[in-house]
Length: 467
Ligand code: ADP
Ligand code: GLC
Image 1 (tube, rainbow, N blue to C red):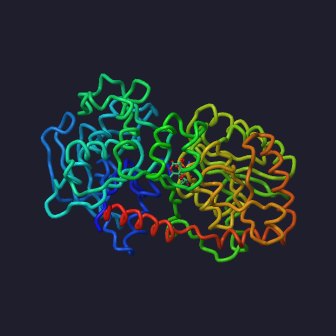
Image 2: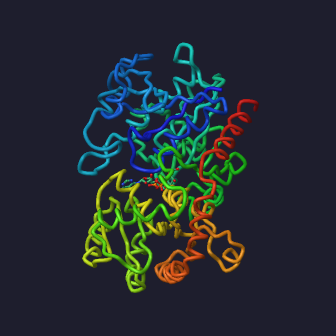
Image 3: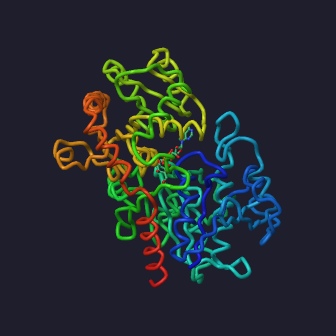
């Protein structure tokens, strides 16, 4: 079975968040099941550097305003199709923003071009390789199922759109219809029109044969106005085509170098040194996160005094919203709080290995990966009861503790008060070494790999091909 995965980021080549981890891990997870997955990625400078002497397998003299080629390359065990289009992707900065953090004004066109080429490939543009399935990720690939249906209605390829985060909807003003090569007839409620704008995400949600998201609970939440962000009506109408498949962890990247919680000790000491934290009686809590409203870290700021009063500590690595960055830097005036602003893969690993607990108080969380890394590393997750966080952590309720099955703590409702109370529970558990050790061991045994989810994707692909 041949699958084309279409994504705007892919670890380890280019990453801003969990989408990259998932796109980078899926091909390896699916290969043993007989799925040949190729990943279509924009040719950002870093990706082009990894391409080496790749061979051009397709070209176009005018792809959304300039010449473009597709390069077939292997890198990091991935089978890549790199869209080399310098006018769109050869820029300093991030995949979506300039060096100052401002969105590229032509993002709609940049990712429409990616989606266009995906549809061409699914329509048979490459000699000798046509996918059975076009698997698009998030709004950046949302137009791919649309272009496929519109331009290649006879193609045998079926399409799937995976929602990693419905907050990002790929909106563009109606004036951009020609630039995005979209016909005005699509500008309706049944099409890609969304509150007067074009939405690339909605185009995909309408046109894809199936829709998935990254956890069963988020799949349910998406059907409600509270979480659906305006797309809930459409998703309710397509409820039977929507399913939630949990993300897995790339075990090669995140399995700790120890087999029991005792092995964490030296990493905790190393973490204390790296972050200048003194010894303390309470749990050393860690956060590795984008600093955005989604992640609920303002709630953590409000509840932080309680953690500190109880002898706990905080080590945070993150970047994003300047106000949150500043607030965490200010909080680090306290000796038991350490903040590092930036993006640092090695430090992220050290935090997740060396911490006692990992905090993920998100307001919404489609899946969340850092709590899974925490589980695998015996770093007890304290998470909000939402989305994939709810699906992956077993709360230390009295019953779960009695049965010996707890793997972490869940926060409900998602508020600063509830987080303060959760810190009471966390520190109380930490002070009962037998219970704490049991939780750590349970966490380390929790199934966080790709096995089940890869089988679920394979079953979805199989079902679609037969339909
Ligand atoms: P999201 O995709 O919403 O950001 P996830 O939990 O799914 O959330 O994935 C976040 C990924 O990004 C994880 O791999 C996490 O380790 C990584 N990450 C987030 N912030 C940083 C940072 N400042 N430095 C290093 N890695 C980070
Ligand atoms: C998104 C979500 C996160 C999820 C990730 C990968 O960025 O915010 O919850 O884990 O995608 O699917």
